[in-house]
Length: 381
Image (cartoon, rainbow, N blue to C red; front, side):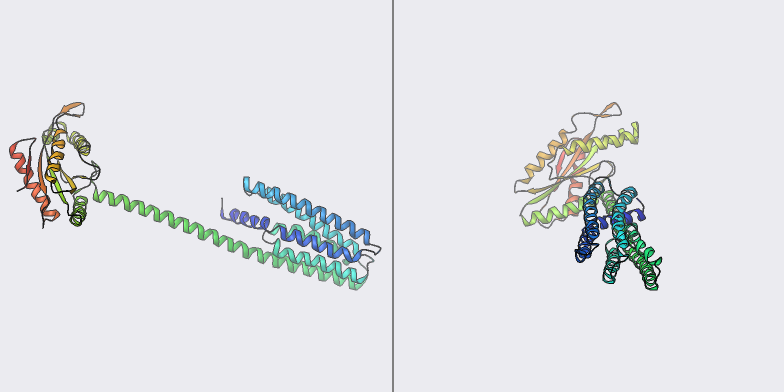
């Protein structure tokens, strides 16, 4: 929906919402005009006119509710707006008919009728000018008969009233137009600001999402999706700080694959990538959800265990055995069964250790395990 139509819809909503004001004004105004005429020779005429005004007012109340319902269900359409303006025109015609009652009427009645019609038109500037077709639908049929009847009168006073009424109508049209333009500009600014805020929020959300993706790329291995060396260092530092407060310890298992180079060289890099991915899946099943499995090199993985008690060595060895067991079954790589093994270096944190020193100790222990042959583990000294 373009901006102009959105503005039209907003102003039409505002017109419907404020519809009780002109309806009450029409009902009270017509009553004030008709009551003083009771008992005069034109009294029945004014009473009949009053009944017509009230009948039209009732019709407008019903149609306003219908418009409100259609507006809520189907939204704004120009056809709906035209129908609503036609009901407003009925009120304008009713008030315009009042001008025919001033022929041969006493001066007080003339003043009363002219003032009442002009007051209704003036009130329409506030209540109807939010939607300019509605203002024209009421004001033109309400005041034109008055202007016409006084302009064809023979005496100069009536012609002056006609001229004055014409000037008044032009003035009210200008005021209503300026008021409508002011409302349209205000509503347009509201929509433009809302669109700008939405665009900025969407751009901000996109930037945040991009930052999350970049952060994930910076801290995770692209092949396996596991934390990388940078993320592992952060996790180790956090785990070390927490476990020191709880008087517990952390440990790392440094895992190096045996037989991976043969797969990579004979079957190609795609096969090597598939092997690494399968290894990552199997190792994940060997640890707790609170533990961290990271890929820190080509065929090297590190497991971080935290919240270990005084007998943590037994828990570390248990995890290491589970990891070695994960390599007992062959891996299906490119429709071929391939065997891989692992050598594991174990290191548990002691007082004064840092993440770097703990990782270096486990790395050194891993090389000692490789000297023992595939499928062995070795504790750091």
